[in-house]
Image 1 (tube, rainbow, N blue to C red):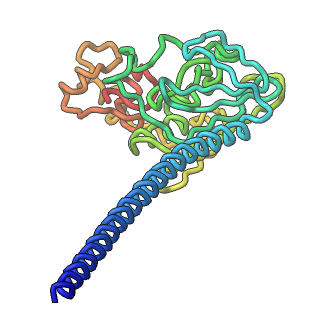
Image 2 (tube, rainbow, N blue to C red):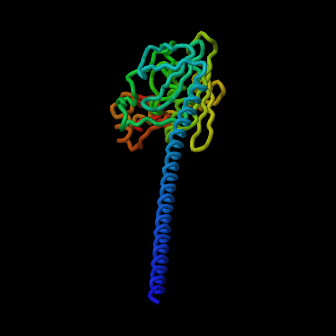
Image 3 (cartoon, rainbow, N blue to C red):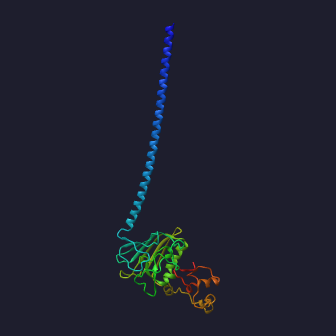
Length: 311
């Protein structure tokens, strides 16, 4: 009997030992499995992060390469140089591309094999910022404009392709000899005024043509630009628009003495010098700015030749 009891006790102890061992192995196995699973998850997370980082870097490189490729194609056949915005020399090199945008603006000007300025482009026209840019009291960035051959004429201005008010510089790659009336009161002044009023423009392109390869005085201008989603195309000859209108019989009759400009101006021109200042115009009740369409405009000093006084 005692022998049987000992046998039963031994059997029970064996069963208990085996059970504990299995539980420990299962627990250890589960713990190892969990740890491995966690490790795999961590590894996957790191791989994904690395992929994202690599993708970001690759995308940046692709953008830069694409931008450089576009410029390479755009400038193909031209030498890219830098010219000071206030250079007054008036000389242009042939087959050159120059940035004529003031500050960080990118306005690209191109010359042909004869040194003639033939094309100006800009993705975006950014207006002059006289609060944050060093603008002179005249409304210009520089004291004078480049002396391109032809501007010494009494009837030709040093005309900007992209005006100071639109962010253009004053070297020879942005200046052409342009009819004074056209530049100050005609189509050139009109398009500049339109862009200013719209707050800028996009997809700007100027195509400039010449009567021959020996002159730097253009015969024709064509401007294409987008304002508020509308594509505008302005084409005009480099001539006096008043003379053209007169030849077409579009000039109106001179006003009678009772309504003549002289009589009208006498009530505004307080010192009788034939010129009206902004102060005199305001004192007479006129609101600023006075545009080129206003009858007072011819008697006022439009220093920046932008078609407006007192803006």
